[in-house]
Length: 99
Length: 435
Image 1 (cartoon, helix red, strand yellow):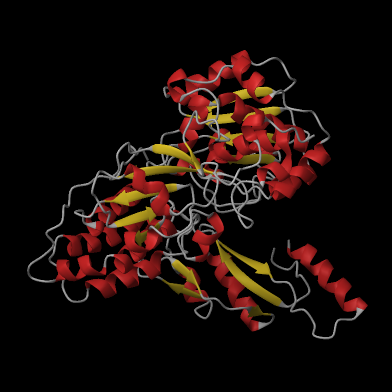
Image 2 (image 1 turned 90 degrees about the horizontal axis):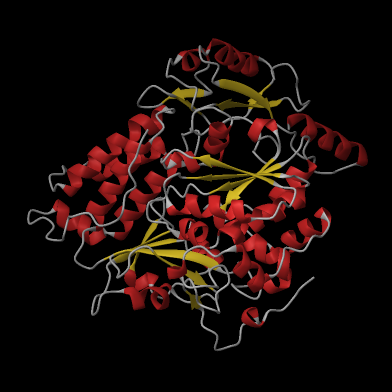
């Protein structure tokens, strides 16, 4: 999913709990986004990840997981307050991409 | 398409609100008495008539209008599941989930044992609704339910729909929908936390309408009698009748009853209490359910919507009664140990957390807690909840949290020097677990 941006510039880490083996490298690579629980398994902080350095850190955590348990998923954009026709179309398209 | 049968006539004000199997005013379990065994095709067709063949679109519209929710516990609207499967790519098929891994529940086994043709009709209707021609029935070989379904399939005229039976592993988790799909696909019967929902991509990658036995039994009647008839039972928010298994400290534990109108839990359970007994509490919704003190529970309406509102969802329809002389903490500990033994072992917080949670609760039940046991239980609970690939650990945590809330008096006596003088022996049924 990395690089196939939904165009929103907002991302979220997701974990496959059945795949996490508690290596803990993700928490070293990206401590703002991943914590380790009392047993050493990854526990995601409920944060939205923006583009830039933030996202690059999260990508390093994803890439470092030996079991491939982490994913970076694009979030749909925040609906604009004053919706124009063009805005609506963009929103629907990126919803499709996010799915 | 709506036909009125005399035995199904609109609920008269004085019509009984609860039916057991064989009661003529019941819906799912109406027909011959339980002692007669499974209902043969002749009796079934004489009683209900053949399944009318209508277009898939009309049938899906009727099911959506009936607002039938899945009866396996999650309560997903069947109409939406059918729309998803009908619109997905691939040739759809139908899976009847007859695993009923919840040890205190018996409603699905009873339906399969006594009314296999009704369940099969529901599966056929679902197949018609999504343009499929194949049904898989998951059950346990060696049980009466398996034999009844196998005999019923052999009895049915060729209606262009193929039926297969799959012998499911006797574990609780094998009945979880993604685990069941994985097993039928040749994999381990363990939950999968990734991938598309079964309705879009299930067995062999095909759209799969997987639902609980009771859901299909309702569907068989909706397909014949229509959504308006279906909604005459139940309440406005939760239409249709509902099957309930009454278990625990009652006469005839495991009794299955059909609730046609929202009676209170007291009205339903009281006839089954041993004479002069007054329960301590009821576990509503099965072992992943909610403890409710009897004084509160007896006036609660048996209505899915209302029970969810008060935080005690009916889930798979189990009501487990705890007698007044029994310790709810001790019973909860045993159920928690059952959960811990049944973990698939796939996710750390579940595999490691549930045994630890049980060990802490055991300290409390054994009346040797230090002052911080309550805090440790809460901290462990929050480390486990929401962290698994499926909801199995969440159910165990919810059970413990509701026990600590409901059995405040028992917690105090366990923490005091005099200890708890209630009966600590185990009463609730536990299925044999195999990992």
